[in-house]
Image (cartoon, rainbow, N blue to C red; front, side, top):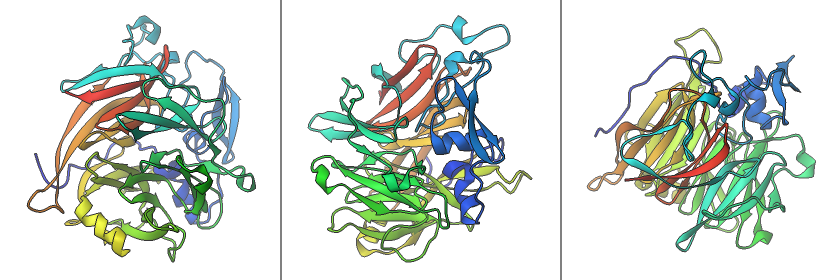
Length: 426
């Protein structure tokens, strides 16, 4: 075990965060829609069946896939999902069709210390997921990138996408905006968001009340890239929040235990020029808060490093209630991870799961145990990076992750379709 910073790697090309650096571009006044096809998938979700994105003159264009047998398509609203079932994915002369696929995990290999439980079909179009506790069960909700709407999926493990959406994310007045692609809950409410082109990267988060839908509301939240829930508040990784003066890339808290909801700037990033990153919360409420910054070791302006920090409830809870701001540096936070291969994070029991790889291929899913200090409750101790799922090919890829109690739901995609698999610690 160790407390403090994990080693920082600086290699490869990171699929830059916030719509592939869209925040950094837009804040500086650039109106380009994309710099490559990755931007298009991040901003607009999955292309139509049989189509792929191209970035032409900095605009996203859908074109026919010339050879569907070799294309790796992306999955709406997910973390770098690919259709590896149609990718060669292996050494020359061997295709994915030739390899045995496990009924649950495909060609992904489960590592020691973990086990699989139920596996179900992941409904078409559903990318981001969240599991809301309901007695001893969990109600699942999903975001469908095909129509940019929230759906109830049912109680785990009997899930299916309803034909009637709960709520469209983007109102008519903002049609053409870009879904942020995350979905989280505080036990009662769901939170997701969208952003638009324009000065300050305007946007809103939708707070959907599952108990009293009439109390659903939008809250202005510029540049909202990711979010997670802690008791009494949503933590939003973005550029601004309704009721908070100024505009700055930071972590914002939206208190839901007050009426009306109350916003404040919760935490600032430790480097200048940072842009938003990933967010997650463990089952014992350690907040994992991320940001990204340009990789100064390369000449490519789009190469970036994704950083993750961990903050104990004893640090962020009084800051939320007192509407004060702290920096994501020691002793308030410890750095967990700093590399260019991060594709998504999710709480996994008393730890955090990291989906690593590239936009088109999963490298692995690994986990870091996070322990809150007993004598010093403001201290978080991080364990080693432990592999959960590994792979030697690109035939099966992770397309989404979501915490469910102490367990982790992992969405996978391969030649046999899309599945949602429940992973547990032994």
